[in-house]
Length: 323
Ligand code: PAP
Image (cartoon, rainbow, N blue to C red; front, side):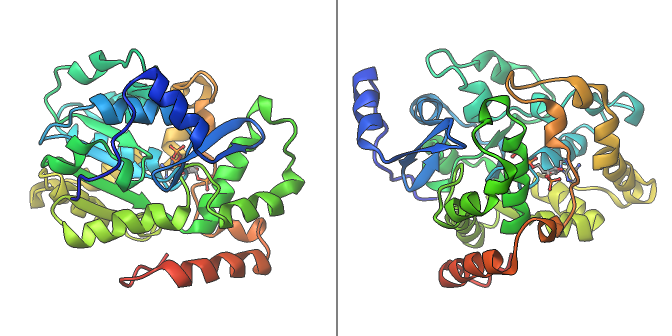
């Protein structure tokens, strides 16, 4: 993976200079996004801090995604795969904790406070690898992730369900009073222009897609829709990729089915921590679990809106990627 990228600023003064020089947009009239390294970054200071300081290890596993493509689901599946022999299913920590608590986001949890990252969480002594999530586009990953032998599992989802999921998610926030549900056309327009958290969507996806073709042992590209269609096949693929494949005995004993059930949206929705808890102070955990369906976008987007984005995808997509 190519580690070259413009060096990140290292002093507060450099950071301030950078901030004032970058194009800026307010997502939902509230959250500043800066166009940094060809991406509308919604968590700039934390990104820069982890770019400057985070040290990946060869055994690390990263779950990468643009938001709302199935991150929470994939985190639960990977956690369950690694811990399938550590707990009885009824005692699995997924029944007590939100997946984002068990597998923290690099930039928004570990480096949430850029001056004082929560490195203690990374030091935990675990009998399985460190597993972290990230929404950073491939070009903005800390260099050590690119150059070490760690593995990355990227999850993508069709752009329309991704947009709708994100749209409805942000409408939950209290501070967003000025954005109303009838403004969906305007916000879809922004999405088409790439002005979306960690967008442009198509560039985020294509970056990891191309890398998965070049380095299939390092980057695995997974689709939300394939997980829905063939969860068993996908789970086996995930187990193999992370070096912990299911044995035929495990398969016969129903281990894969058990994990699928444990990580189903229906089951996770019942978990108290997912009903009433918060991993992020400003987000209720229940917002991470809505419908989890394929094609719900038809209830929100018009054919004209869809055509507009399809054109963009047609122009940019290559190497046979179909979303
Ligand atoms: P994040 O990037 O903020 O962590 P992410 O988990 O990627 O969000 O996306 C949330 C979507 O995944 C929601 O989709 P929806 O709005 O279309 O319903 C959510 O319902 C869905 N989701 C969460 N958990 C599961 C699951 N176990 N199975 C299927 N879909 C799920």
